[in-house]
Length: 304
Image (cartoon, rainbow, N blue to C red; front, side, top):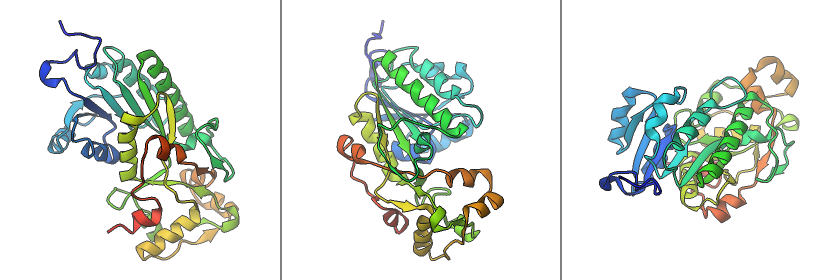
């Protein structure tokens, strides 16, 4: 009878090595998988048609639905480490998907470590101030409230499972080879940005550096620790688009007042224009020992 005291003891002998489960294996998840060649990598997918694409990347696909808890039971005891990048539902103030995943992981021996990809939006509007990981969340949108709920669930799960959990608070993700990973389409549409006196600070991270941070947190993250995964750029939103336009050889976007933006732009763009903050990333560099490959957005957007 296999032991249930060790994450590896519950598995047949041929499987007794570290195994990584990626939940939410989109662009960033695939980058994480490519950086973990020394592990056996599994990925939860809700699309059976993605199985071939995952296998072609050396990833073992597991079909399941975060919205259907019964399909997640097969995950119990399979992985020794987990990267959870799947988003919450699009409605409500809670994240039942994360709750269902965590319950499944408790059915047998829990993973040693779990990394959860959250959002820097949990802080709400900080009026352009610098923000450290010790700042209390103040979510101002249902989207951010769902993330705070998921973070809390992860921390409670880690205590019950005697596992290490790292929460990565992530700003805007970009990369030239990422679908929608550059502002090119927005610049081509000439979508306006705020004039300087109304503008807000934004934060960014290159997708490759984010994947590297996930990898570092799996192995180096202190238990129940929060990290800002952000680059060293400190730009207001309009200035970011101006820099991107110069690098991409496109015109600068038009500038408008906040009143004009409220009258002409949709709810989603306005939500990003309503929150201003700058993220400290010292903890990521010091504790995860992550040296950014793309420390400034100029580095990532000018990559050839």
